Each structure stands twice: as C-alpha cells, then as structure tokens.
Image (cartoon, rainbow, N blue to C red; front, side, top):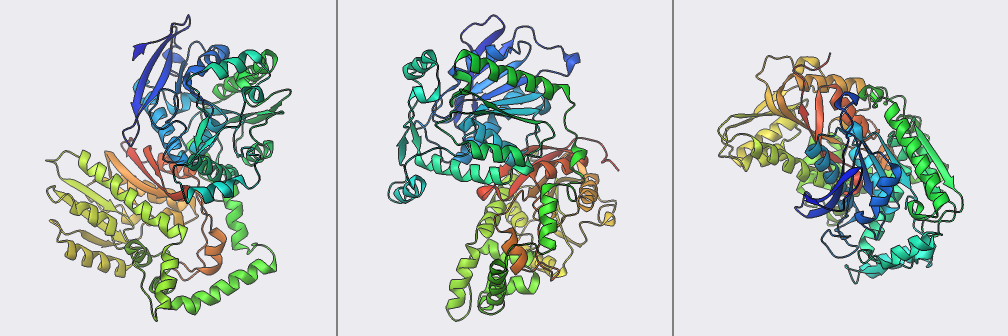
Length: 601
C-alpha cells in the first residue's frame, strides 16, 4: 500500500487486489490508529459499496461521519469505475460485480485477519443490490448490512425502455446508456450537487448489458429475499427520482432476518449519505444505532438452520407443492397437458425417455444432459430433444459440471505432486466429471473411489473408465450416501470428497447432516469437501407437476438457501472457503476445508 490522504483517526492508504479473472481493482483502506483490542473479539471492519457511476474517493466523509475510529474501513472502485480498469460503466455482467465484491471482501479479511462475523457492509443504490445478491448467492456470514436507496427497480421513465434495450442489444452488444440523472435530482444540498458535478472520476455511462442484468438479478433477489437472514437496515428516500420504493419495501417484508429495520427518510432524495445536513445526520444516526445493535448480539449460529426443512419460507413453499396448492384450474390444466405431451410426444426424445425410465434426477439422465447432443425418433424427436436439453435447468447443470471439474482440478493441482491423492465421490452417478478431470492428471498418483446406490450407474462409470484408460482404475462401491455404515468402513481417509447433485434432491436436513458428518469422518484434517447447492429454481412447480424422480415419484424439490447449505457443512466440521455461482444463481459449487479433528456427533 502507498500512503494517501492523512487522517487524524485513521491511516489512509491505497492498494489493489486481483479478481478471479486476474483483473486488478483499486481500493482504499482506513486503518485505525487506536485499534480495538484483541480481547474485544478481534479486529472489525466496515466495507463500503459506492453508488453506480461513483467511486471510493467519495466514501472518505462517510467513514468519518460514522466515526468507528477503532475499526478498519475499506471501499473499492468497482470494475469500470474510478481508478479500476475497464470501459467506464461496463463489466462482463452484473454477476461479475458480485463475484468481484466477494473477492474483495475475502482479500481484506485474509490480509488483515478480520473474521466474516466481524465484518459489516454499508452499500448505496446499485451497490446495495450487489450486497443483497452477495448475501443471497454467497451467504458470506457477515454481521449485517446497511442498504441505502437500494436500486432494485430503477426509474427509466421512457415507456418500454427495458424491452427496447434488449432489442437494441441484439444489434449492438456493447450498447451504453447515458444517465439522465442531474445532481439536483440526487440531493437537496447545493454543495453536494456541485461536488458531484465537478468530480472527474464520476462516469455518466452505464452498459446496457449491466443495466439489464441488474434488473433481472434484482427481481430474482427480491422474489427470494426470504433466503436471507442477515441483519439488514434499509434506508429509503421519500423523494427518490432514481429508484422505486415498492421493491425495497417488498424485499424488506420478505427478509427472514430476526434483526431488520426500515426507515423512510423525509425530504430525502436518492443520494442519502450526500443529502442536506439534517437528513444526512439522521441517516448516519440510524446506521450507527443499527451497527451497534448488530455487534451487541452474538454472531448467528449455524445450528439455526438445522430445522429449516420444516420451519422456513422454503419449507412452506415445499409443503404447498406437496399439498398440490399450485393455483387455479387453468394452471392445473396446463400442467396436465404438459404431462400428457411428455408421455406421448416426449417419448420421441431420447433424453425424455431416459428421464421417464430412470428418473429425471438420475445419474443416467444427467449423463445424457452432459453430452448435450440432441437425439430422437422420426426427426421431430430430435427437435423436441433439442428443446429439452436447452431448458434453463439443464443449461445450469452443464455449467455446474464445468465449475465442479474446475474446482476439482484446482484442488488436484494444489496437492503436492509427489504425494498420493485419494478422491471419493459419495454419489457419483456415471462418474463422468470426476473421471474426465482425473484424466488430465495422468502424471499424478491419484486413487478414485466412486460410490452410488444404483448398480447401473456404477456399470456406466466402469465403461467410461475403460474408455479413458486411466492410470489407476477407480474403485466402485455400491453404497447409500445417507447410511452411516457407508462411512464407517475403516478406509484410509480421503484428501478430497465430492458431493454433487445429491443433497438438492432431499428435503430432510437431519439426513443431510448425518451424511455430511459421515463424509467428514472419511476426510483428512485439512482435506477439502466439494459440494453443490441449489438455492432456488424458476421452474419448481413445472418440474414437480410434470417430471418423475429416480423413485418414480413426482420430482418435488425444496431449494436449500446457500446459507442453510453452508451451515450444515459447518456443523459437520468444515468451513467454506469458496463458492462459484452458476447460471442465474440456480446452482452453486462450493469448497470447504475440514478444520476439526473429528466431526461432531
């Protein structure tokens, strides 16, 4: 870091960090000159997210106004903003900004020894949507979040602006939109308006791609806000010309947080922390009271999620599906027609035939989806199969497979080259992603054990292993991933254990936790668990009312929020170290490290 503007309470500095795609982003840090003593629970940090168009240089005054002089503070320049690289106002997509922020938080926590539960986020406007998406998709375990004027729905004013932008992007992918916002629409303060207009680092452009991604993601996160139980303070401006109030209120109402508060600030425009003195002081006081309340309570315990399979919003939705509470008769008629078509015309599709025979969640079905080569009868069957393989869920599954293979490849590459490596997959299906990944490391001494409860899946794995001509043939075991006996076999511990596409299919948290504890018993101390999640799905009802699972029953799923999945993993003695988000946040791939010598009973 290099020295920057001096401060009486903090040492201010500037630095950079590398994102997953090796883009180096700029950030500022404020180190307390009289830090909190270790006896008080270790260092704490406030991490700030600036508004759209802005940069971290405008955060300095807010750090001072909040006045947490014993705590660290950090603020970044988002990709395409301030001193960070990229076309101004642009990014590969909105989800890239969320991934960047996760990288940023992990960087400062690791560099300065700050625990997630000692971290609190303050986010404004578009930054608040980044924070909300981060909470939903990554479940970071932070102490709380202050959201000011969250941009869940931006006032575009032009009729049909979003459809028009989507159409225009079909002709020009790198389309940009110039902001219509004037400084006087952001604040009543003439001084703050002049400062905004005079700031050379503020950009008025935003990528249409990012803008539309933001709108789609915000809609998803507001819809599924019940998956978030992090303490939240929402500051809402009553004269906001930039974003709408209704989605902010809906998000707040749906939150599962036991500590949540929403304050509508009077005579306030969008730039809440840059308003007139009276309004800004009220906002700062509300934020301080909330931050103090967050740190006055103990961090949320992982055990709170153990009963989420029966006592949560997702559990209520799941029970409604089981009770067939899906809506009026036209909707029921629609699903009845879908089932009829699946059992008749659908049989011309090879993928649908496999699903009907083995279950659409089976290893055989997934292996076919991975191949992504439409096949069928009489010509029309191939067309139907192409539509089937192109469904959003299957596209997400294929991306999940790639992400799992990359996560596994990274762990193999990081293992000492001269040491043998033991890998276990407890529900391997056809074992394709494991065996194909291991094929890339034929120079390593790798021993693979594949387990599955279905013999035909293991036979398929054996055929694939023979085709790949692996250096070491995999050991195949017919076992139930939920049976304790599957794990207490006296086998030598494994370096890597994989659980992919399994727990998403089962609602019962007690069974999942027993399985995870069995996994932990077979995992070396310091070894890694690779696991998948399904925090939500846009086609839950369609799937439940038309498709069958491997048991021949309706394929009814309860999406398990990422925070819940991570909590079950933590309860088994493993700490999550990374998460990759899949297509539209439907699936995730995470890595956890075993940190306790023996799994809790």
